[in-house]
Length: 406
View 1 (cartoon, rainbow, N blue to C red):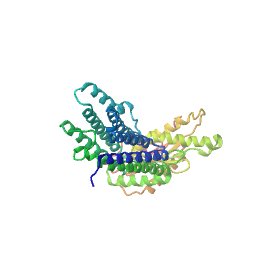
View 2: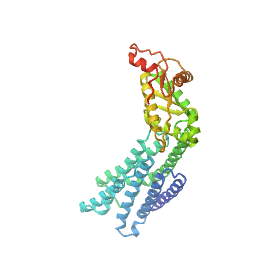
View 3: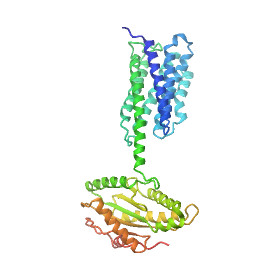
View 4: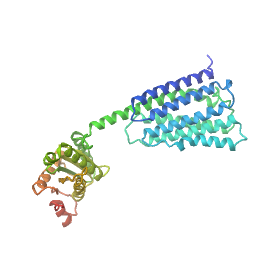
C-alpha cells in the first residue's frame, strides 16, 4: 500500500491536537506549573500549521507565510514551557526573536523565493529553539527527575533533524512545501509521531515526578519553622556523618534550645511562641552554608550539622545564629520579646562516634550552657588529631561560655 503524504500530515495534525488536549488536562490538574499550558498551546498551533501544510493546494500562497509563523511560534512556546518548568521566566522578546528574524529576512532576501525563504528561516528557528529547550531541561539536572533524559533526547533529535533540513535546503535540495516521500524532509513524517507522543508522555511524567518530590519534601518539613523535621534531620545527619568518615574533614553538630520558652508561651500566648519558633527557623536558614543541615528536633530544640567545621568554626556559627536570633526577637511583630537561645557544640574528627553519641555530647554542652546562665555557647572538648594544637585564644573560646551579650 502506497503512503499518501496528505494522510500522514492529517494524522500528524490529529496527534498534535490530542497532545494539546492532554496538556490542557495536565495544566488543570497541576496548577503549580504552567509549563503544560505553554506546551498545550504549542501542540495546538503545531496541529493548525500541519493542517495548513496538508491543505496548501486549496489555499492562497499567502497562507504559507502564516504557516511558517505558526511553526516558529510553536517552537518558541516549547522553549518557553521548559523555561517555566525550570521556574525561569519565558522572556517574550526571545520568544518573538524567531519571528523578527523571519520578517527581517523576508525584507532583505527578496531574491529568494517565498517558499524557499519560509523553509530556510522556519527550519533554522525551530532548530535553535529546540536546542535551547533541550539545554534548559538539562541545566536543572540537580533535580532528580528521570524523565528529563528521554525528553532531552527527543528535543535534541528534532533540533538536529531540522538543522539537517536547513543545510539540505541550502545545498539546493528541491522543496515543494510538503515533506514529500523520498526526500530528506520526509523523515519528519515519521519523526513527528515519536516527538509528539514522546514529549507529551515524558513532560507529563516530569510534572508528576516533581509533584511527588514536592509532597515528599513537605512530609520532611516542620510546618511551623520551615526546617527539616526530626526524622528527616536524623536521617540526613546520619548520611552526612557517613560522608564525613570517608573524607578528611571534621563535622560539627550544634544543638540549640530556646531559653525560658514556657515563659514566652505564658506571657505572649501560643501565637507569640509560634512566631519565636518561626523566627529561629528563618535566622538559622540564613546563617548556614548551602551544604549544611538545619532541623527542628524537639518542641523548642533545634539541630545544625556543619560540614568541614572545627570547634572554632562550630563556635562561630553558633554565635552567629545565637546573636542573630536575639536581635530578630528584640522587636517581633512590633513587640519586644526578649528571648535568647543556648547552644551546645560537639565536633567529630576521624573517629567512630555515632550520631547518637555526638548528639548526647552536644546535649551535655547545652546543659552546661543552661546551667551557667543561658544565652551562651559551650563547645564540648574533643580530640583533635591535628598536629598543630589550637591557639590559647581558640582553646578558651571553644571550651568556656562566651560572655553574656546585653
